[in-house]
Length: 388
Ligand code: GDP
Image (cartoon, protein in one colour):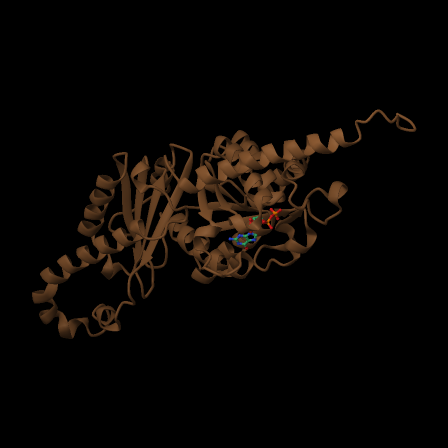
């Protein structure tokens, strides 16, 4: 899939920068991207996004210093300067993209406020789907972050075609601060979504046995709402398995023939186990997977490790475990020492973390209103001001 990433705000910019780095490293050219921010220093810290693709907005309002945690200003600035954002996207080239993906931390100001605005305009202008990867703040960041995230997400789900959630609090280690965890968390995000969004692209390792094209990803995400992604990788594949594909293959062909039946079964079993681990392990948003409407199962790895039966059986297993019956899937070969499995659980019906976030936001809003009332009544004692 050819993806156009827009990194909005600090978190979004950094993560898109890493997607582009991964694309360079893998020599795939599936990804392109720009970064949009109200803070000049955040844009300067990026490495892989071209300088001309880093857009500073809101200069007349915040003079390049960022909007802080004020996402209402973030949204306003994005709306005021939507033309220059769209121009920056257009000049990077959009004619061959399959989807847009907006990436942002939802608890802050710029990305939190700007992402839903951008999603609305992208949808209005382009025919391609617009997805978002929204990062939830950890509760320890304070109630304002949760409030911002709840407001942003409630708006975003109605604007984007589907919103993938990554929950910072589910991924940081006990005792570790969120800030210390950023690099590791970003790595986890880019690894998972990299496998997903690269599906359907023909790489150097050829095409898969069961090709997944971008329309299958798009159909999986068609239901909208929020989605979560599971991921697992196999143990390192031993060099012996790989050798059998190389020069030695002629010499050991005979022995291999007798082992083939067993290896086939073995390969299927390995793939099923991997997919189970991906879905039952830690998801980008911990949630009740049995409430997912649709799912996508993807395997990426060396061609000799791929197995059609394994993919089929994994799909059936996923189908038995989710609410809906639509499970798509397939594989694609990559030159790697590992096999990776990705399971997209699309349009989730129940995620306790989201319910919690909305509750915190509601309580915060009530407290803010109460303290506003208190403040305004303090000087209501009949003393006349000097002038009106
Ligand atoms: P913005 O620049 O105003 O959009 O705000 P930030 O992106 O700085 O922060 C918004 C949210 O994203 C906060 O909850 C941060 O904890 C989180 N965040 C910031 N940087 C990163 C990052 O590099 N990785 C992750 N996973 N989260 C981040």
